[in-house]
Image (tube, rainbow, N blue to C red; front, side, top):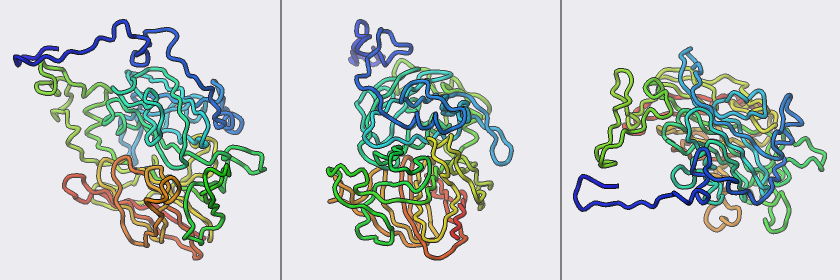
Length: 437
């Protein structure tokens, strides 16, 4: 590629003749057969879903199917329609047309996971398994691994915890428009019915080091090398999923197309590219650096309020098993009983600053999929108590897991405060009901 500035030459290697090496970079692939998968999938979750969710199937053995949809209008709390890109599970009728956020994928630690990902609409797309450690070609980072229309990702999870998956092509837009979902890595026996438990319900277990927190019953210590699937885990009776997001409706009006903000390249890329040749409307768009959300949401449930106000989601909001890998009873607004252990998994999908305040003491057990104090990280961190009324901040893509357990009834609200990422101006005080009886 030549530049108008004399003396600047950037040679680039051609992929011609190397299509087999770069097969996953082409859509459709330019070589046959494509790069093979060397390990058969052992994930039991798709079979469990097919057996327990009405109408569900398992088209490909032990394989999770993930479809990336493009161009769906969804109504907000005030009736306005906004453009979304959705993730669907074509094996589950309730999720076959896509949902926001995408279906929660649950995977036992140690299995060989296969995710058959297909892009619908305008390619390319990818899936990045955020926090998982796959081979580079299965990592799904656009420009670095591959950009595909149809590909089976393969990886093996090694750490129990809270993760998420998202499209990593034109990430700023595609993530904001809904191409993401929660990813939970569970203990190895989470879907094993041999102990007679209902593997599609609660209680369940998650990784934690609660040596110094005896108020949570059932904690198992030991070592991961022991082979005990419950080593360094604790049971929980109630599970809440808070995916905190924000939406700038101007973005949706001005960039409803997946390629809307692709530049027209000049002769000096990065210097004289034209970001306005595809503008629509009166806003002189390419304004992804100008983000001003006016809708606020937690796990697909809108806070029904305007900028500058306060709003609460409905009590009793739960996530259907069809959206949650066959597990019944995952909650958004929390409804628990006295002395139950409650696990709250949080993902910040917002682009502005988020401040969360719990009305009860909570123990922070994990961040970004890694459990504090659990080997091999035990020497460097530990769980800690966050006192009631103490705020903590979350930023984009951060995850945080907390536990609480109370002996007293309560009917109260957790607070999710949205503040502008540049000016720190107050945007909305969102509230999530918590009831303990």
